[in-house]
Image 1 (spheres, rainbow, N blue to C red):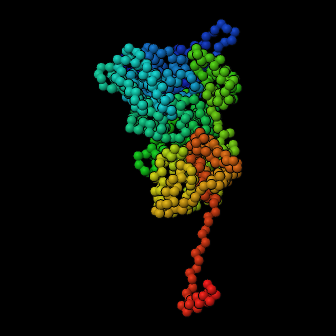
Image 2 (image 1 turned 90 degrees about the horizontal axis):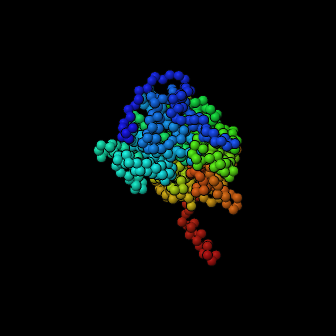
Length: 600
């Protein structure tokens, strides 16, 4: 195959057979998944499973007419001179399945697999194939840690530069920090045919670009929807695009990965029984509002653009089955498909980690099992979820909060900022129709210049009684001083500092423990409540610690400020003294004379 050839979409046969159709004999033979070879030793080696334990099933047998995977395998072996592992071949055939019209079946692919199994090589092969063979003009690699994305990119650069044929179509390699790019030509001219760029996974990822293949490494690290929302928008204008997310198992803070995994598990019958337990929800207007180009909040139609379509979502999960003993070597093979296929990745390597790692470090990193995270965080296990309102499901499948879960009284406001002052969170606290206290995060945006106008807006000003945020020694403190001194800001600013801070946290802790405060399901708040680390003072009082916590705790601090303000007894100033009664001048003169006579 010529590295510059353009593969036309193959003609595909009509769809037939059930959803769980067998992949086909040809698929098994081309992917070379033999029986593990006998070594002649007393103990038979255990080889990693080429097939994912859980996956979105194909619509029909996977042949060269129904998937692009075979072409990518041929490209890897004959052009890049790479020997792929069986699991990599299986994944390529499954994830690049075609619809009858020759277009890709999946627009979003999530691959869950334990560490050190060869995800980077797979990403490099896909990036170069889509650039060189399929002709997609922009490939973008991202990771929460930019260095990780750059390492994968560098591997692709090396494959091109070190090959005599591929180097002929290399236009240039940009190695300037923050602008790294690999550019190739069409082979006949110097015109750029395709680029491979790298970006950090944040709300600015992909701004100004229209991407075709977007590769996200370690999606488990996405603790909010900003990067996912920004990256998703880069593919909206493309008739064909693919978002590939590769990751190890996550935990309670991995809100994007949890949502996508739950949707995929639900679509294939919930094989591990996780869907009811997770109760994950997609991004809300609060999560994505900063990705819009104006100051208006997202409406339902705009929000729907970010929701995942389960028909175009594919999941391929190599993980140890729930309930298996951590020492069970068959479970090791389920989560580590490169086991013993890679000569340096042996059972002895995994056994050493099993002996030395804490159980859930081993289960997450090596067995690709999810940590529920319910035993961590500042509240008694399960208490935060008990206070969470349950959304009602509408006939169209969307969720909304019922009227009984709405604040109907006037509200007080709690404010807080992230430790780097990049985000400001606004919480409202009030009472529902049943008299129960409720606190909600109602806004979360970058910076703080918008807070005054937001609170003073005619739509909400009349309902707001007062506002509080940590008055001293916190990222939010300068804003609280500014609001207090602003004569045009007519909402009373209540000082919250000293012992009131720890008293406020104690009140929040007690209210959550005793289920006397309600809150809506909001990932930005739920993650903070599940992971906050407390700063304990010498007297035993405590408060969430911005810097020590693994996820941002500012939403929880805004919640706490609002809850404290709601329960605070308002100090009513005494009435002014009555005006003095009018007296006659003669009486005043007489009184003055009397005081003079007494020596005063």
